[in-house]
Image (cartoon, rainbow, N blue to C red):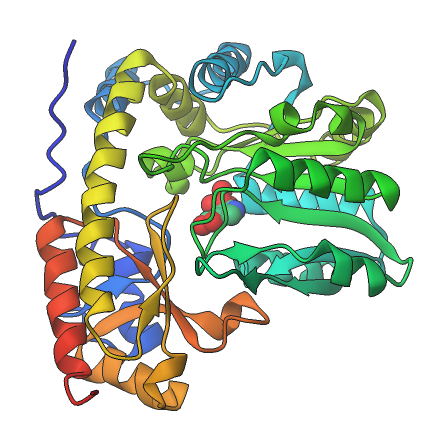
Length: 395
Ligand SMILES: Cc1ncc(COP(=O)(O)O)c(C=O)c1O
């Protein structure tokens, strides 16, 4: 069956309790009437038809009671990982959590103690820091370093010399949010060896793994560094790929026996089990029809990338990082000669656009804004035009 997903269709999400649109005035002061939300990592496209069919099937049964089907879902996860990513996880090593933020929080509780340090490579998805701090653990930031090609690199040497000995865990985002970086096998091997040398649990958050743009290949950590299996926690979910974050379901795969037993005990203690909608959507997503939709989605996102980055490149002093993955454009305003307060004022008030504020992503993000471009092309172009107008006085 060949599908034709229509990503150009403008959908009005205002007034639907959609966080990205309806919380925009409160958080940014950008009016919902003609503002463009480019913050929350959520897509403005209609769900894949295969998901709609699955939800219709659920409605027709008119039964939302206790259910079976988690093991079939895990089989679907294993099929997807094998067919899309060349990784063959064992379904018996998988656990379901209420999304991956929840999975990170449980990992912190399970494998670290209050006061332990947790390493992150900043700038990075801001919730990493929040989860670590909320758990009473200590954030150890290792700033990423931009290379000559404008892409971030990890600096393991500097990190190594700054270790205190209290580090217990390393939280790794692959592909990287916010910078859209796809890590090479070599980089991942070096990181795995680093974790081995310093006896760290490596939590690999690969939620963005399907959103890899043409010309790039994401290699899952257990494929890049199979030797790390005993200390690896893999976090994946169909939610970023298929825009189903509201269904709150993530998969945690733990190949190592010891770490797996501890996670299992933690879930039992919390009495956590997956929810019906999350299971139904994940099973529907991880199918050949779902794969076809994702292929079309990625092609469309690549077109948005080209349009948006090209437009940003025309504003003097503004530099967007090349994107290898995700639908998040990481844009640096440091060469505009403006204070970030003024940059934000122009973006929010003059352009009526709400991007994510770079400083929230940790060290190195202070002069950047993150723009979510997963919205119909016409809206991306409108946003680009408004941004160019807001900075038209720059030479
Ligand atoms: C790297 C990363 N991890 C986790 C999450 C959140 O996952 P969830 O909605 O399943 O809690 C996000 C959301 O943007 C993310 O970018």
